[in-house]
Image 1: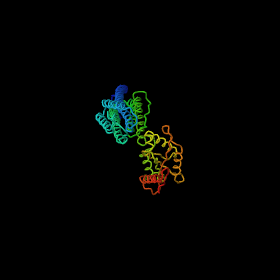
Image 2: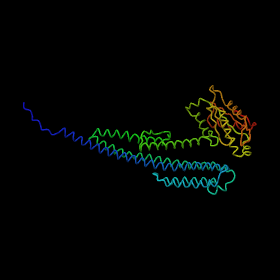
Image 3: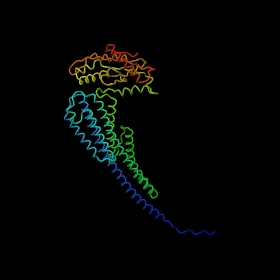
Length: 433
């Protein structure tokens, strides 16, 4: 049997591997060049975005702090407190300068100057309505506390606009991070093409890219998304000491500042500025929680004390509003010391307070005992401006039962009982019946 002749060799293993090695070296060189250029571009973009954000956010944060300080002085002027009026006017000029400085900061948001201008106009309009703008301050006389709510509302509107501008700065940073995805796609395409030529080089550089670039970038992006969602406690791990590490440190600093600012705003929204007690909104939220369907608090009844200082107007007339405020602060401390840890003391406004009293563990009402402790706390006189002062309280007690329809009814019952105590001779408490 004749065999067919063997065809001549057309491939050389040496040449094949030599060619493959040459292609691998070329792929490694091209891949390294692409990676280095791409990483540097991303870092540069992130540094630029972070720098812009720090300039944008810092200028607005400085402005917001100055406005808060100026608002506090404005409230003092409206309440006839002694305030250097010339200094107050100079502060307005400084704040106008801060508005101007914030407006000229280069920002990605084209509407930033208009938003700042609108905020400045609202700020000035609020001061003008309250008689606190410019030379109006010099002619302000007497107690103008009636203008305080409108002034506070105007200031809150300005703060909301500044918060919106800061939110736009965060959104601009996030858009800058999202733009880096285009470069990421180019890197992936380049690596996919080089994969056919040099699998090992591609895997190596991809592993390096994931470890040294993509994880930190994605971690930063997740952090920005968490900030946008309201999670101001999130922090990035700073495991690198390079530009990405500096970005992570800057992000953590910004998140800490936002957390502090958010905590301050939340506290001011739920607490009384004078006494530090919970305010009316916090009281209503606490009571409403126990009426919600499925709430664990529905099975735990609560009582409510409505408290009013007897003849508080006489205190203000004799000691001035400063003395009245001092009395309110001292009384708040005694009320807080008279209740248990799970009870809630709130100031409703003026000389009115309220206490949410949780029933005893055996289900019996605890309002009576808490009321007695409050009266016991009044046995010692108050020391106001070097003068000894005794005051009495009228209290109304409403006990929540299974038949209590809602928060409004419970509040109405306690208020009604308090007025019965007032008309019944004061310095006593009445149970709603």
